[in-house]
Image 1 (spheres, rainbow, N blue to C red):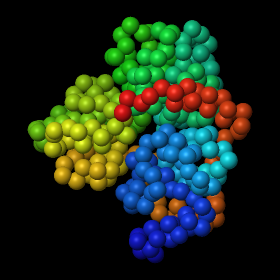
Image 2: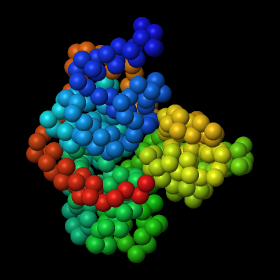
Image 3: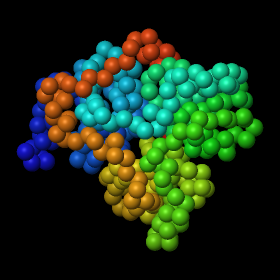
Image 4: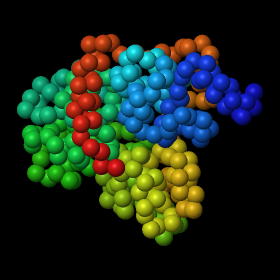
Length: 306
């Protein structure tokens, strides 16, 4: 089948199955093009929970499909590429977090949503890259333990020097590999461009950024900025939405290495396959789901930064 025929077939099966297709901003362009919703992980899970659809097809990675199920346990959640995991999420386990809690018993555990449901279930509260600072600000305890992303934790520590913030030594391999030298090289090539960076990037990269925000905050920022050119330091898939929403502006990826292989595992072919056969169903044990949702709901109650 041609690409257009595959897209048409997907839309047909989605209708037949009473399903919706959710695509993360880091997905392949052709997947984002045909999605019912494109966004960040929590935003997509929340949008899916508001719909009447019986089936959620999540074009993303495993923890994202878990989040969708956690908020919509009555729905069937499908993950087209079941092997699509998140290396950062895999760096922390419930056992490792419990050991950290024993080591730091007086600390409030803030868990990034880029983690498994089992890890969320052991945390006190979750955070996204968009509401991170407001979550940390809302915690009365000045002793905070953040998992699993050390770069996100270091970003928070910069803003709250009065708080004792400890972190687990995890990171996103895709964001972590971008270097300050690459940002400087990109600036030399595009001297009029503003640098927008995701807080999962290393501290030395964030220091060079003109603006730091989550994936969902990048397009709105670019729209309101007076700049006409932007250097983007996050996964390259975001360029599709940035260019779509800001056609009069120019966007350049900060590094050719900013590509997540797990996010690119979802294809039109495996979307068709999982819909036709209703395979790759993602669920979460109810006891784990209830505990994890508790940490997520505490976070949802706090407004996002962007």
